[in-house]
Image (cartoon, rainbow, N blue to C red):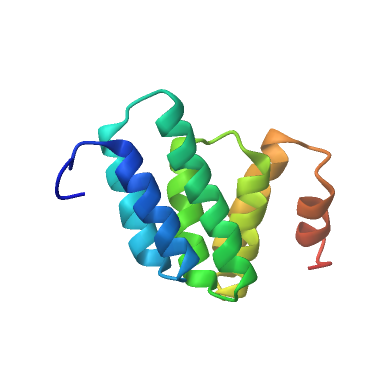
Length: 126
C-alpha cells in the first residue's frame, strides 16, 4: 500500500487479508479506500464483492455489528441486491436493532415482493 497507494487492487488484497483474520473493521476501511481509487471496472466489482462476502462472513462468525457495517456500506453502493438486504436485516436483528431489521426486510420486499425470508421475518416467524 505504501508503494502504490492509489492502486485499488492493493486495497482489495488488504481487505481480503483482514477478512481472513477476522479484522472486519479494517477490512471495511480497506474496501472503502479501494473503492475511492476505483470508480468503475473489475476492481470496483471485486471490492464490492469483498464488502458483501465480508458481511456474510462476519454474520456467520457471530459479529453482527461488523456485518451491519460491511453490508450497510454495500447496499449504499448497490441498492438493488435483495440478498444483501436480507443479510443486513439478519445482522440488524442479531444486533437487537429491530426497527432497522424491519426496514431492511421491507426493502428486500420492495425489490422482490415474493421474497420468502423477508415475508417470514415480517410476519413474525423470525
